[in-house]
Length: 363
Image 1 (cartoon, rainbow, N blue to C red):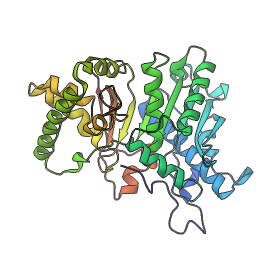
Image 2: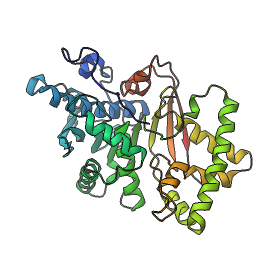
Image 3: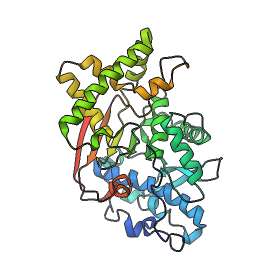
Image 4: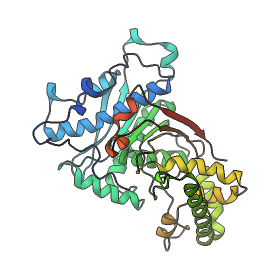
């Protein structure tokens, strides 16, 4: 599942850049005060900082500099400063940024400020404009095969996060991560790497994260969806037991080691790229309810695709990037007229969203 044309230029963009890059035209200008204890405010600001990375890259491609640059408004409005721009050495494109929170002293509410981040590392998804499309689509394909880890984009991202955590001097919980689409995959890989190593468990915001699987959630009949998922769980558990053999306990421990990392996951059921997360977490509870909890737990940490990709490589399969032990899942139940709306970053700062939020913890 690849976001081949997300966040690309609008029709006619060769003549006129999209107004979606203008914060005053499409950003959350209503959010003049940020209460960092409010989930809606946190979500809106994190999505805006991710959008700032998209616009940084489009500023580069359009050669918008100085007062013509559109990106700075996306972070300055919320009193962030741009500390580091992350560039992919393969094509020179900007794919990420590290921001520092620098609010004016007179605006600081001590209670709300106690929950604010010191730093945010944000990562964009695919842009299909000439200056970045080739590299982005290459990484989309690698994502399907769990191949991001060895690429320069991930290494640059990981180094920036390590450096930022070090600067935070023991307060790693004040370093937040955020990503959209392909950027969510990079964010997920980084957060999992740190959590599993015991280095840091970072607050994480994943917008429209890719779930590399058939979009069962898009099937209209609920009973058909449930039947497919139950059958898939038994098949996955059987393949995992066959290929992992006695090493299944190692895989279980590795998966359970991530349980303390509880990312904030934002999904639209009309988005085929990320919609399956809705069913993924709900199905885990259903398997417990029908007395098949052991099968469900084995299936929830494996995918047949990744098990088969790992044949001959030892260890009983590749670890699926898209499977999480725990998450706070926020689902946008509002109408989405088309795919670009359902998958787009802009939906996540709208003040009128019909949201459904549930916490899922692995046990």
